[in-house]
Structures are given as C-alpha cells and as structure tokens.
Length: 157
Image (cartoon, rainbow, N blue to C red; front, side, top):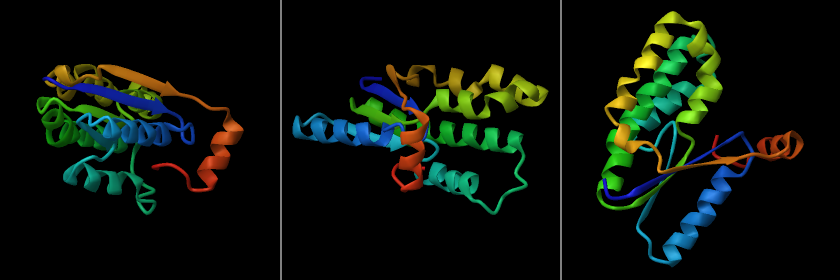
C-alpha cells in the first residue's frame, strides 16, 4: 500500500474531530491527496452498522454483540474505505480505530471466553495487517472541558 494511515484516538470531547478537520483543511490547501473517515462507519455498510450500535432503542444489546458489531464495522471499513484510499497513495485520517475498541469493549472482551478467543485471533486484523495505522495520535483533555463540549453537542459521536 502506497499511502499513510493516521488514527486519531481519545476520549469524547478531547478534540479529535477538530484536529482532523484542521489537518484536512491544511492538507487540502497544500493539495495533499487524503481521505477523512471514522469508526465505526466510513462506508455504506459500516455506517449502517454504526446506526445499529448507536441506536438508543437497542438497550438489550449484549456487550458481546456490541463488540462483534464494532469488529464487523471495522473489517468492512478497511475493505471499503481505508485500503482503497491507501492503494491510491492517499493519506487516511481516521477518527478512532483499534485503541477505542480496547478502551470501550476491552472489559467485555477479557471477561467473555468466546470474545477473548475471537479478539486474540483477530482474523480481520491479521489478514489486513498492512492496514495498521502508520501513526496513532492520542488526544486527551481534562474531564470538565470534555464533558462541557459533549453536552453542547460538539464532536462526532
């Protein structure tokens, strides 16, 4: 793959989306070919999975189901969005990636034998190892400003 892949990780309200937008604007001015995407989502099927995951009416969704949906969205996102952009030589900017899964689904993964086996094997990750981020940036912010940003509706949640 010819392109580069940067993942932006961090808690809600930390500024990931803002920093990605600013970088994208800069790259556009410099005429650098790039793609901006997010997880879960980033492609038609992955966005449909995102809607299921984030739909508030599915309150009985198990933690295991949620973790598997995130994994399904990721493998589809890689195939539909990230890999084609990288093959075209683009710089891919992604709002969240694998570390978000470890942070949010990690406790579920470690406590469920089925998921622990699935996550350890990670067929979607190993078969697509060349799509691991070239660089991962971690954005952090104190809790109070982050909470304030979230409650104002800023961000890409």
